[in-house]
Image (cartoon, rainbow, N blue to C red; front, side, top):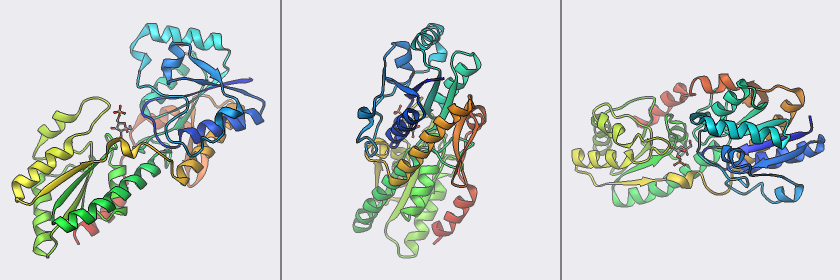
Length: 340
Ligand code: F6P
């Protein structure tokens, strides 16, 4: 076993380059040649790949995005793409693939492993932090830090203008980014997909704050949120990969019901771009080294994971079987502050 392939698939996130750098460094040290596949699965379809030499990974640790590029395609929908991938993979002489991705990319990797098209090792990437089997997916920490900084900034302007500020954050089906940045940023109300809440309840909470003399309210909304009394909001914005838009509808409904001036800020891709946090670089590096170890041990079909701050591994199947929803203990803890 001498040739490792590596690809980054799905949405990009800060920390991808830390993993690539670690895989290449550790791989070379262990006597492997590491080949980078360009643009996720697309690179295997187009036969777009290149050996990554040490020069190519110099100075990338603090760079956001991915030097390999990525794509959103799901080749499982197309037998012709599967055929091309199998053919190009075989021709490349790659012995095992390190696949860095979220739920969808790892699902494809597992399918290819089951079909005996390639041997795979997974690395959990997701600003949403929604992969099971790991306490943490890299990218999440940076997203939470960015969102927290934005909430801090929006706090001061909301306070000056006595406004309701709705801040929409990413996270798709889960509320991890909303919950953790909301707590860290001192949000007054946090709306997450896991707990559907009615707009009326939100307005009641705003009124009760005003009664206590507060003239502004910070509301952090996860993009995947469901409003009990407005199911049509969800239906309007739930469109594939990009979930954004529900914050605007919630803000309008609040302004209509309360009469308070309400503004919305959608943080969007700012949460995914730019410099990774120190923690994401650290975990990305540990995951990269761990992935090469798994190849050495021939633990194919597994994903590197973090448990109690130790690098371990879990079957990819277990990681993608069920979405990891928010920590309800943390949510309940946050409610103490909402009530304040
Ligand atoms: O899954 C990561 C994520 O950033 C989500 O938080 C967001 O909903 C989605 O990707 C956006 O996807 P795209 O880059 O395809 O618009």
